[in-house]
Length: 228
Image (tube, rainbow, N blue to C red; front, side, top):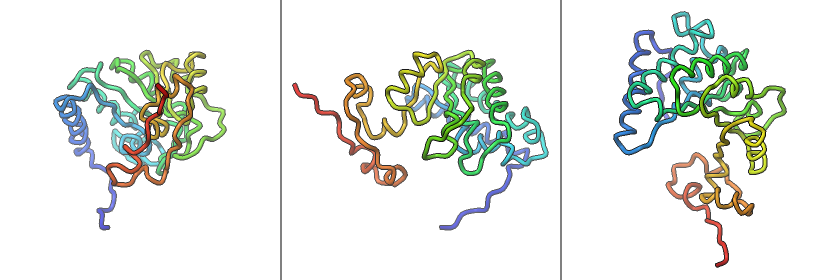
């Protein structure tokens, strides 16, 4: 497969990409979506701008923490102005190093973004737990999302390797407002029902997560059979 070599965006190109996010949000609403989540996590473009182990720019989008977060916040502002902040959430992973996008001070990065997002009054902030440094496994860490949770004035969602009991404990302990489930939901289309009954869960098959088949690994997991 051929692909073009990666390159930094030219400074004058950055507003064009910000506008692409704005248009994508508008298209989503016109297509019938309730809202959009701005993906500023997992090593993708927004995350690359924010992380100092990747961002080596020398313009207004590089260098200081404020400059590195400028691109993300410009996107948030553009999308919120286009469709309304009440329809917008954002996902962040300041502690993660997916695709080599790490940061030398992830706590400062996360705290800065949590505070900066308050002025937009987004619907929620969705953050990956520090224990999910890599994409597949949980790691022991001294870091916590509590500083971000305390700084952000809206609904806070935590994600990252939770099971039913851990999620209930996190919410009951006011560590978060909501818990997001990804892999468990993919493998269990009736996950809320299973959680409510404390029923066994289907095991997810990681080898099918990213294949192009429209059924296998996506819609072929069985629903819970409950006797009448």
